[in-house]
Length: 85
Image (cartoon, rainbow, N blue to C red; front, side):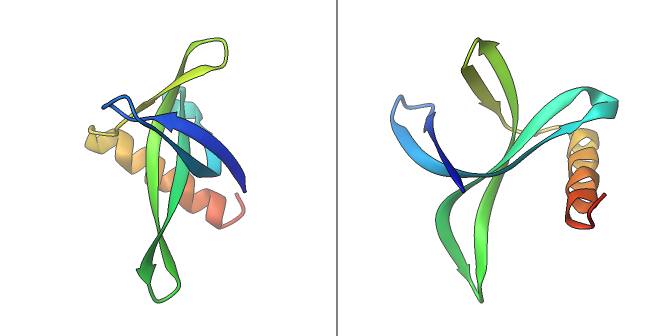
């Protein structure tokens, strides 16, 4: 997987794995799935899902998903990715 560096809200940076990125076309937004290598046990890994916005060329901002209707669309898009759609 591709490693990327993100900047946290406190100004620190960390390297994470970019698991996947995808568009949700009906709301015209882009999202990423990131991993910090954290295990949840039983072979499961913790992942983080955020909207990503390009603020300027090659500078991206991660935005938490707080709107339930957007979260539902993101979950549907991820389900389609898993099912090969």
